[in-house]
Image 1 (cartoon, one colour):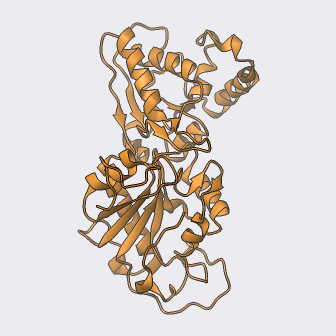
Image 2 (cartoon, one colour; image 1 turned 90 degrees about the horizontal axis):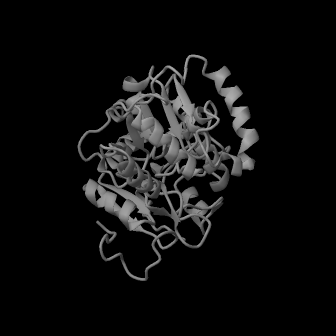
Image 3 (tube, helix red, strand yellow; image 1 turned 180 degrees about the vertical axis):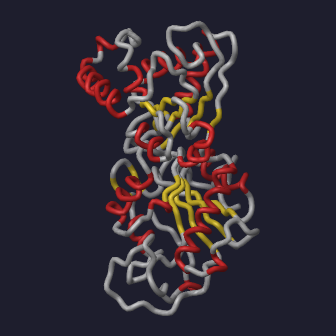
Length: 361
């Protein structure tokens, strides 16, 4: 894989070094370059990383965005619908794989916008769903009453009728029950109604999670009670498929949402209500533009760079993605200054441009 972006307008190095992008090499700094007029958003799975390893020449491509002294010269971030771990951990993992220093600010995951819901749910009982560390993610965002779905179901031994056929989960579930009681003592699942459910990343145990979520959603957030008003439900993304290490695409969070919605609407009188984030939602791209502005501000550390969101501060923002329905469609919906670049390293493997969602605009 190769990316061809012109960086001739930013040949000199950035003077000084911020805490956000610490110097990793011992070279003398040069005068600061002019403010970059373009920025880049890279997808992760299928573009930069395949499974647990870099794709093609992605490390070399990313390294070209840094000066020889390790300072960032071209503003870029990773814009992914994936997640399941805090942005700080994802940044650390990407740094090791790509051989550069990635700041947590440069990682925008599908669930990153959940931070904006803190004012509504900060002190409310919520359940976090998905692989990885869903409870930790929400706790780091500031939510005070969080249980992962693993921790939540541990309080109800008979809630999953298939549990006896999943011996690989039994010991883990017992350990999580004792841990959740000590870490979250103020959250009483037997008396506190769940007010929000946040699907952070792809769920692992679909049969159990669909069963438990239907129970919570149908009873108004308090199991064992009569039907009540549905708690709020949020999905970090709605990807039907994504590219992982396996050659063929894998079913994503969107597929889980379809399964949950179909079953819930069949067993419940009222249809499922939910909100989905992630690409191709234009909001995600507007948020990414604001983050890129913050990155530029940190790079230059000047007063005129501190204002976020002023009109057309970037002449072009490149969205580099592998999924036409998600990456390319989202950039097209977002409009100016976004310009889409489609790779053949992930979901898309066509010879020509995609017919329905062509890249390049």
